[in-house]
Image (cartoon, rainbow, N blue to C red; front, side):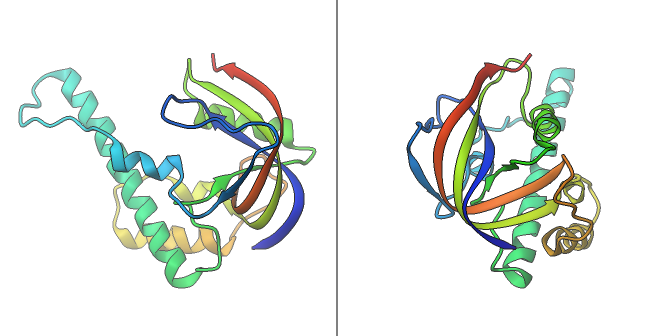
Amino acid sequence: MEYIQDQKFYHIQILRPDLRQWNIGETIFIGDTKNPFLGYYDTCQFYESDNISDPDKIILLTNVLGEYIQFVRETVFEEVRQKHFPQLPSRQRCLWLIPDTQKFPEALNFWLNKLITQGQQYRILRLNCSGKLHYANQNFLSRHTGNFNLFREKAFKYWSGFDTDKDRADIECLFEGFVTVESILSSTIHT
């Protein structure tokens, strides 16, 4: 974990009607409330039915199962963080950042392809950040239907920074603290 003061990072802000857009010059504290990634599970609507013979329902239920597996993973990762790494930013309350390095164009492309679906609107924000930061290998986040101990093992490696190279384009950068929006680099629809 690092403590940073007035360092530049980038953030992909997904534009949805239920999320407030940040403005240039605005300062926001990150870390007190659930972020939109985890907050989604508090309000999502899943399909309820005992009849799964319709192929469309099977596809829908497969997607729902994927969401539940992801929720389990996030719950186990938070359990491990709280028990062994409580000083690190929580995935449930953090802001994900992209470092301002030579790899920025490659990293931005990686995260846009991973996070943004076709037709989804987003903005790329340049932020001035002061707070705590954790770099982690996102490859430990793969979904699986194995036992919880496998999730715990991956979580321990994730939080310990195992196999983490800050110069990789696919590195996760979790942040809690103050951000000030310096500029909006672009605002677009993903095609």
